[in-house]
Image (spheres, rainbow, N blue to C red):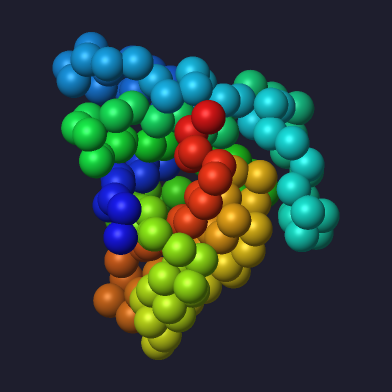
Length: 152
């Protein structure tokens, strides 16, 4: 496995939170702050409801490296996300795998007896990405970027 990262969800104040963390930890955001309006259309996501106009300028993704192998990442929640933000689901563990096969194996094992939030699929930033909640209520993201560096 390449890395284990922390992913935080906020209700409209991701940018404020990450500027706070940046002031504490230093460094620069990888690829800047990506807004939802900047996301390319994603194949397989056509059934997802559209964002409200006022949500398009919210933070879609931000990455702040903490160490060589640890990154703090985050997003704002929106009305079209499969889960509503509540205390307990705003922190996720993100596994960056070395291969698509490893991503599939880990995702299958972590989601067994739990719940799939987003099936493991290709995304614009990753060859494989999926989100699930394990049988103990822990939120996981499994990511294999391949040749696509996450956060750029």
